[in-house]
Length: 179
Image (spheres, helix red, strand yellow):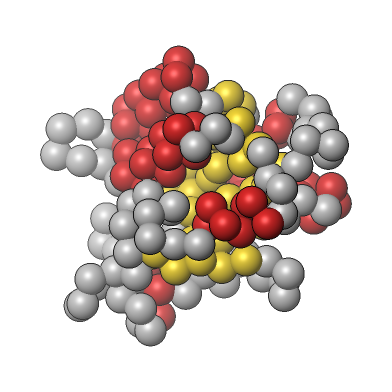
């Protein structure tokens, strides 16, 4: 998909923090996820597309509790001073944050979404962005999760890609988003 820079686009990276990579239960295809998001970041920087990061403020005692090492953005992800970092307390990146105002200020109408966790924060944010009228592009191989007690991570990811493609987002492989 060619990204028309006349239609203001932003890259939103959800909760790509150290914590999910420190758990005993590993994030599914974590290295591939990091590589795909790094690819999107490099393309966004070339196209001068603003990049937004969310950081989930985890509950007390969790790896991603605010201030803990696991709360920080993953060290393989380069942050620039112009990047916007938004702290959040809920799965929906818009809920009780200034994300919507930040996007309005930059006249954004299209959002490329990536990050962690497919069935929680990525799902909630895709649906909310769609409901707010944004054109949503979900990186098919740019979000991940863990195995659950019922489904493995691959099934969870595929299910959410399928549902989002039917309703809420244009689901594209990472390599195809900036063609």
